[in-house]
Length: 144
Image (cartoon, rainbow, N blue to C red; front, side):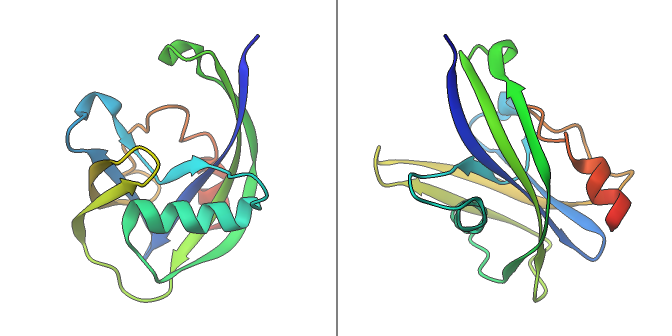
């Protein structure tokens, strides 16, 4: 039986660009957008803002809209997991840096991960995203 997890994915935009990142220590993880697990008793909206802040360090974010919900079997990534993901469009309310590095700290495990952030032009400049994270990009582009 597969493990079921509930996740959020943040498409953060500014000036018709999408925020993406690379894991500096794990380039094989591919290019991603901020995402993470919804905690017990946490709404998807609260989770996406928390995850976006923890991964990017940006405090100037607000939810523009919920884009949809998708279910993804992570078997091809070697995980016995079905992820139920809620995708959101977030916007920066003030000008963000053009590129930066940020460390996400995991207090439970004591680990930290360095992420290298940069902006990609919507829609044609978006690189392939890892782990089905591009599933709702068409909905983002349709409403942009």
